[in-house]
Image (cartoon, rainbow, N blue to C red):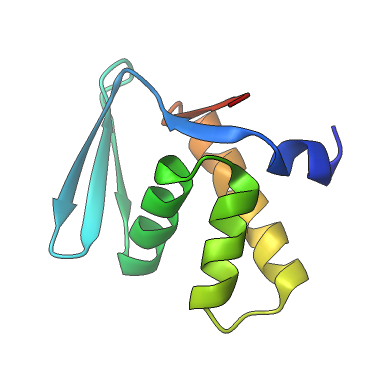
Length: 96
């Protein structure tokens, strides 16, 4: 799957995951595996932008405006972050 095809997908929180915001940071609990995952302030911001946006492309555009980062570096890091979230069972990639 090409990067462009992935950017046209949506990231959704998995049904078996609970999130808790803790003073700007977050904890995610996968109820199936009973594993906790913590995110620092930046990871939390990226996570919520991803899950609240209508597409990965929209999240990317939002984050590119907010952070001083090279566009290609952000794209690579964002896709790696999404891959980690999917592998941990925290999110699902869907069509809109």
